[in-house]
Image (cartoon, rainbow over the protein chains, first blue to last red):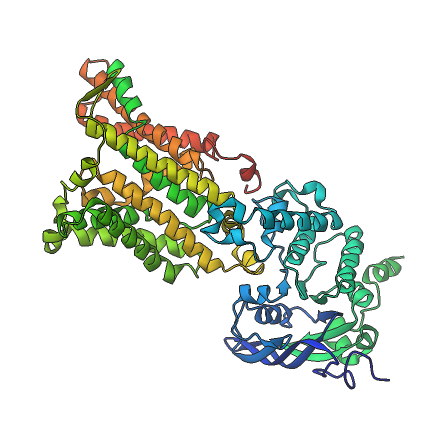
Length: 282
Length: 324
């Protein structure tokens, strides 16, 4: 039975029924090393897609290319029908395609609230001359603040809103970065390892937040190494290895794919190495 | 003793102090708020000093058109420095600005440029247009140990008015959403870029506005004195940086108070030492050594300040806890 997401069989580079992002022949070389060489990939709209693969597979580079933080040697990609190749990063973000970073980028010496406000778009006070005349941007600022308070409450950071972002814990910074990205009111949220360095207690709430994004109609694309998370929340999984897409499909089917197991999970992916050692010791 | 104290206190409100304060406010915008390492504030001051004085002396422009020329020259200089460097890491701006300041100083002091720039002698007598606007009646104005003529008083009043206007302007800017964006850029450019802000444009705006403050500082600097190429060396830039760090880099008021303290302290130590040498209290120094010694003493005072109060006088200690 064909899945409801892909048009045909779930093969690498398959067409989707309703794609939001389509990339063709995206290639990035660093010297002789081909970091990314994606022939064709489509990201389904309104769903959670996981991008997995071993270290050095080119996932983050691919993220950087799609969001304008790096320029490919060749390739084209469209977001909601708009060509994005060569578009600078800030314009990509304005179009509604926002990203977070593998190494969290909280803006440390400004407060949590100011971090949030910075995510808002179309604030007239960000223009140098209008900034001088408060009435021109005050009303807009109040609306932005109200939205920020709402998001901070949802991410349980409201008590911290007047503290410097530097005073937050690593996990809280991840939450802040995600909340700040949401301030841009995106259509596609790209999360680069949202779970890295987050303790198990916080993982559950982060998962809920990501599911929440989908419920609000946003598309989510995330890079992750945590297989439980991938299995838990993703609707579709794309596997990269050595810069190429090697497999894609619904999570349960992809995990069984021998190519994926070889490339990424390894033969012992289901055995608990710690427990095994213990058993031997006894 | 009254005279020594009076001298030191008079440095609190000299036009030169105002000029340094304003130049430091410009650097506060560049470094303290945007994170741009501008090690060439001297070039903004020099470009405008020459732009202004050459316009008056050579092209016989009036005061205001000459100020206009200085402003245009300063904006052009900001673009010249910013276009190649602002896409790169902040270190490159530091290298380019410090080099530009030196290059400019050497160009204007060459003898072949003498007919226009005055060469190593510099330029003077271009301030008539400014003093012609003086509404203060001719006379001597005495306060305590000071005695000003109408022109001194006018220069003092105008200088501090200009400083106040720019300080208020910067205070408004950094509390606005515009200020939020540039502070974000100081913390992490890529994060701000990922939120849809044109980082390059904001850095350029900051460079231009801070440079303009340097420009007006340059005019205040030369109005009561003369344009000397030797004044625009790296020492000028480093004094301004000292003043900025003394007051606190991410503050507005810090630059003003920093300039006042810096110049008063310099005057006080110099006067105390030379009086001591004169009346025989200090026997191990000669009058010629006093000039150098006072800079050493000020240097020690600044070192102590940076060690025991690294955020500057008005800085927020909290901001440093996290950087450590």
